[in-house]
Picture 1 (cartoon, one colour):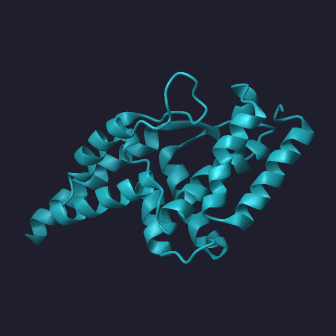
Picture 2 (tube, rainbow, N blue to C red; picture 1 turned 90 degrees about the vertical axis):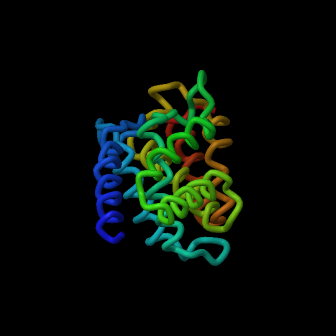
Length: 196
């Protein structure tokens, strides 16, 4: 059983290496290079550990770290939909659920169930952990775009209200981080890198 589990786990580890090839629209801080999903997930995990004290509610930091590390693995099959995409809805959960079952299904049964449950919890966004995880997911690209003179906002002509509406989910997990983010959005308008 242990050897069988190990083989399944190694197979899963090899499969998720594909996450490094999923390119996002957002670029690295002060850079012209787009980040990939693996870099994004790692960054969110570090942000979770560093910023956990700013959660409005008590959270299980390890669970949030698991959430942000696995939340985009489904994009290996489903692809990354740009949050400001005007042709495809960013919430393609049905397509992603099929991907989750296939990819996490490579793991031993109990582990697969755990990963699917954590992924679903993130998608639902109801628990304190999911709210904080989503805060991190919305905060990181905001920091990146601000560091890149508007980044994807300028490149794809994304208006202030659309950015504000997408980013206000940050306040569901952390009022302090939302206050910082809201100020950053307003400063971006003042600098002319986000059009109001």
